[in-house]
Length: 334
Image (cartoon, rainbow, N blue to C red; front, side, top):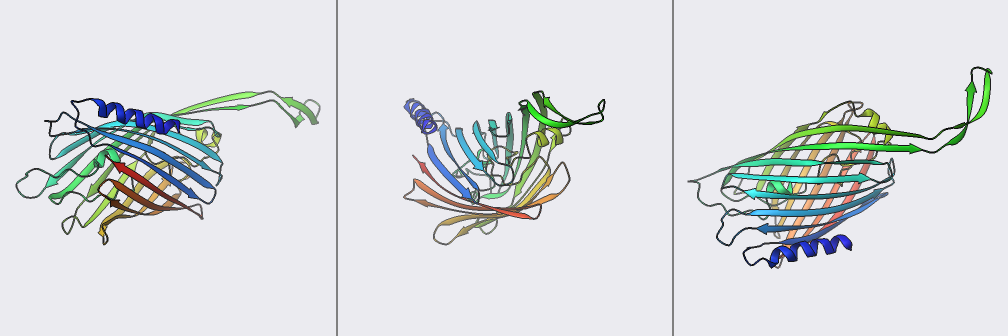
């Protein structure tokens, strides 16, 4: 409820300025699966003077997830950012995220930035603005079709996250071997505290090509992760929790730090005014180079020109085990 009030206050304050022309949204998602539950609240504000063609958009998202699958974890994430449509071809965005697993004592913070270039058909006249900026959305569950005069688009994004963990162990009584006495004895092991830090850089690119007047849009995404040092130590200290290693993906199912990631997908305009996204991906863990496969389907539909409903299914197969996550949500635009 506190998060909800923050978002309402933010949007009302931004609406209050008489010099603004605003197209705002407020939404929520809930998710669940075997041993997993979560949700998020999000809001966005389209900021511009009444006579300005190209908008600035501000967004805020707060998410929570709890899981007992694999290593138990309780995570919270907050992301805020702004995007700008420079002209008919260029869009850019910048965001700042903070994520924390309170059970495994691991957290990260850092910026994400990127841009999109769109190739247009015809003489390059005005483009009908999409319902959401593709850079600001920047997630695998976007379903909005591109404008009809889009020939192709390429997006480049990069995350720079600073991870840290502080592990504390209290004193305990243990049976240990004493080499001086040459036998096992009972001793009190003193308390210890361990701190590890690592920096992660994740450049990635997405290319899409609309077909059949944007009724079908196949896309391809790929990225690579760079680390300031081997992340295996911080991963083992944190118990290899299931955490999202990219912003806006707190529902990520693959556990552990990653080395490479890739995804192919297809966005389709279905009957009954339903937009959809079908995707298949693979993610490689950096510690042992094993691959996990991901699958997903997202369906969205708008009602009464203001309300959008979303249903999503995601599955991962990692280490021979399969996990599913289901989510649904509503977004109101005003």
